[in-house]
Length: 230
Image (cartoon, rainbow, N blue to C red; front, side):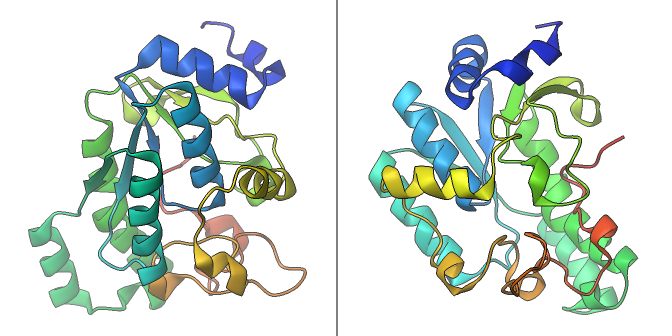
């Protein structure tokens, strides 16, 4: 595992097979139930039926995302481990800065993401030796350096596995269609990347894949802190 560059030549299936064999049950997919994540769930369950999946429920997700979660649970017979933000922290933040503080400044938006996503992620990763994500290099300018397997120094040096790093959006959707994988119906309405409801919109023709996330900010600012890169 020391030669992480060797994973760059491996396929998604090879990486997932290795990771699940090496780390299960101390490995889980962090899923927001975007296209990449549902494709990975389908692949993982076929390799290991008891693959673990967790999600961060911010309290501001679209109804379509909740509908998909139930559909995934039913189809794959898996538990979705759900982590919510700390109630006291949310109450304090909203009472001080309002419900829609994220529109006011980048700092406020990152604070909201910190409370609703980053802190719950730390709890979700506790006790894991590795986590899997659906990150792809072509998603945005902040993700061009994503490796297929890397050491996550921000979370205690556990392994962070990004099997789809070199996949295109078309490859993801080809897999979804070929394997009849359930997906978020917002994708049919022009949403290429789906997060919290007030922070996500449909993408216009020619725009970046993540243009609909925090659309009022510059492209180089569009990370919530879950995937901060040193």
